[in-house]
Image (cartoon, helix red, strand yellow):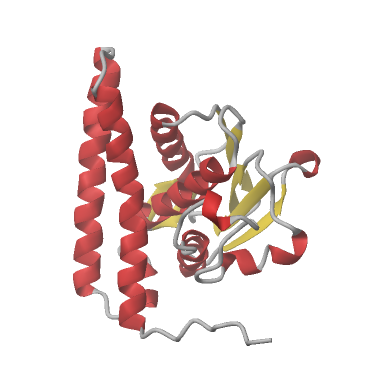
Length: 233
């Protein structure tokens, strides 16, 4: 029996290019979704939001390319820039609104606290985009996705829970490795296997942790992020 082919090690510079390519897909998906909305008669409020979010997504792509030009390594690229107080509840509301507008899944948003942390809002927003995008990819249409932000002691807990196939317990740690793909049939869920790797790298760079669990009642998957709460809040 022939040995399994191994993926060759790539230099850190190549890793940066791979990460940027992966992250650019998210704002492009937003723009594509809103263009479909604008291609049919819509209320003025929806039209205004579609234009605003599309412009924001274009700005995100521009910022990613700037990061690519200045970063020397994947670790540097994913590290937070200037840190400032960030409300995870506001970020979650923003991300859920975008995915609600452009997708087929119903969402429940549970924000019992502003969830203020000290960090890079752009990077932390990408964490939520990656997790919610992952949930929509693995959850059947019309199945619910729940996003929560809670304050527990000195920590802010952010959760994203879906009703998809879930992740076997023995595979939950490996799910955050680079190029790791969830599920047995990867052809049904195209992607680069970098989304959760990016999530873990950004969260750990902010002094936090992330883990995967079974969803409520053992159904689906639940991702739990724990970040230090911002001092003074």
